[in-house]
Length: 425
Image 1: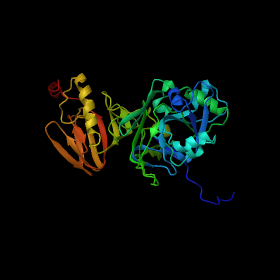
Image 2: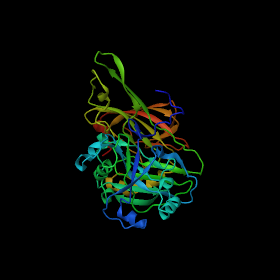
Image 3: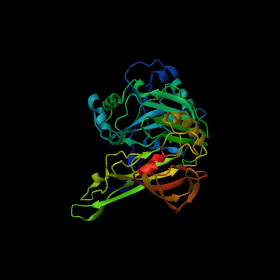
Image 4: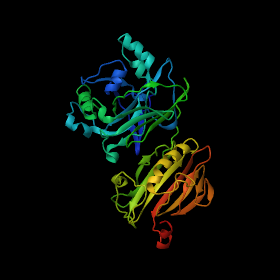
């Protein structure tokens, strides 16, 4: 077969905890929440759903505010629509409703960006919505999390969008008119669904305008957020990749050393309120001495979830954390801590709202940037290349600089001696 006569475009993808999800088609359901249908001048009822599509390369991973989505051209009214996103992992046609969820690879949260002024013109002239919905970078999404790690998103989960820190959309997923399994079944009666397809499941009331400089954050319970900043019209897409590459070795059936997996670290977590902080969980083992034997790639899949700390019976957790500068969010965390700390019996006048201790010995190395290790009575500044051994002490990490700081940690189970433990009670 002859080569392509023009350069082949790159494969669009979304980031997942362990690699790239190749985007095939993007289906968007319209008016899937009663309140949004009324908001847009309609009278929604449980009639058959209607769909429109976006090009696959409109999808882009937007994991934090350092991702800049440019304000689109030929637009005077740029709108957001926060939506849960479903990624298809197994294709099929005429899929029964009761079998539909088996075809889901995972879930994310994203935004259906819309040139509302062009959509209004298209509606008035009874023309398609392509120019209003299918423009470049119009489907930013957060991390796509596999079902095998987090399970299926349930009706009781909450979806929320904040604009510059203010809540503008909020709903429960149970309020969707058409549920995920029903949408998959319905779509598959018209199209053969393929691995890599995305379904944007509709937006609730509260849609509104975006302007350059706006900071957008969308969340669904249990999923990492979608975060981005709106750039100037004509500006380029800007993304900062804070993922961690993880290489896992093992032995093949002949006992020869091989690479089992080379991908992004799994189990990425972005703590709420701490904008820009990203926890990359790399590995863990339970018990004192882990077994090493003949392995295959499945040995790298260790149940998906990594605990905050190693278990009491012994073990270790390996993670890499990127600490963003705390100035933009520390006051918000302090206000939150002042509300819940009294309920725990912990004094709220600590030196830092994230002061904590655990029965672990933490070995660490500062990979980049600088950070302050705060203790009860003193503090020490650490810079790239410095190492530390944190032995169960009360502490907090405070990034007072203007740049991120990345630290690699290994947390090993320890036990407070009785004399020391009595000091804490």
